[in-house]
Image (cartoon, rainbow, N blue to C red):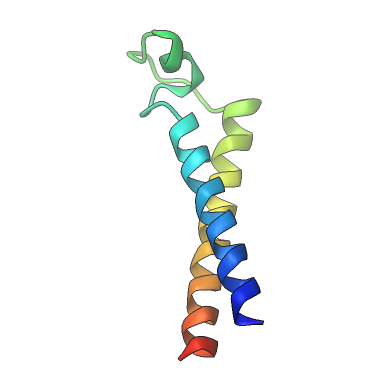
Length: 73
């Protein structure tokens, strides 16, 4: 059982890394292609979904890490 938890934690970690890398440091998806991030704008559409998914996966990763420590010893 603990091995499945470790594998799931690795999958969540790789997914979390991917989501964080897709968010271009404060400038949204436009920063990936050279867009200017000098103006303030709200997150909408894909950017909002990426942001919420990142939060969700980080909470899931944190909970899985606590569970794996408690079970694994």
